[in-house]
Image 1: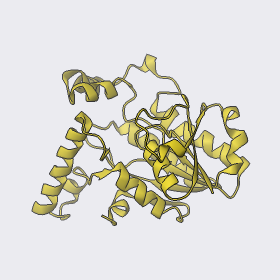
Image 2: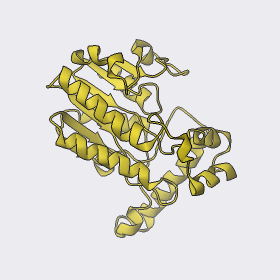
Image 3: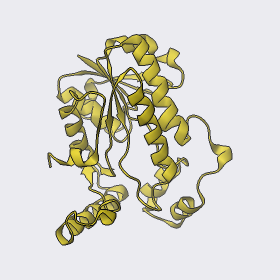
Image 4: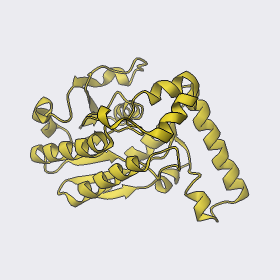
Amino acid sequence: MSIAVFGGNGFLGRKICEYGIRNGFKVTSFSRSGIPPLKSNQHLQQVKWESADIFDDSTYKSQLSEFKTVFHSMGKIFEDESYKKDISSGGLNLNFVKKLIVGSNPMDKTIHNSYNGLNKESALKLAFAYYKANKNGKLVYISADKGLPVIVPSDYIRSKREAETELLKSKLNSLIIRPGIMYDEDERNNRYILVNGMKQLHQLKQQALGNDLSCVNNTIRPILSTDQVCSRIFQNLHEDNTVITLEKLMKSY
């Protein structure tokens, strides 16, 4: 059986590709570059890497009928792409904090880098093309858990929820996954240090308060690795037209 991963060379997408191979699927990744991640293991070497523009279905629609399941693993937390460089170069530096407060420049927004474009419209474009090609297929949409106050912009969560609503109303069988903040077990960079601190904070919260205070629970959320999330995704592939929350993703761990 074959699956496709749109955004397969991204942070979570590459793990979805890896776990697809591990679970016996033939995996094709679609991305604008069509280039595999720099760090490639034996599983990723078995993935077929294709170049495509998700907003231009002529670049991929002819192949959609062959896939039993299609993953949409694309999106961004901040519309300004430079946040990735800020985090990797020094964690929460002054430049990063400034962008959190001021936000992105509206003049810099395009369909390829706006919340509405990448988080929502790209998913709906893919869903429409996929349903025309395979009415019995399933779309797995990687959404997001609750936003973190101040850090994660409300527009990011809004665009994800709007995409969820439209997908679940459509005729296409859709599985919505809502992971929280994630880390890669194989990396020891600034992102790992930051997220590991958040993970320890959640553990302290659990030891001191448990789940008794909903206001605290909604702010200090569980942290999972990309391996844990992908393992749970493939365990739940049989689910139809439903939402897999972070709490459900946590049940196996």
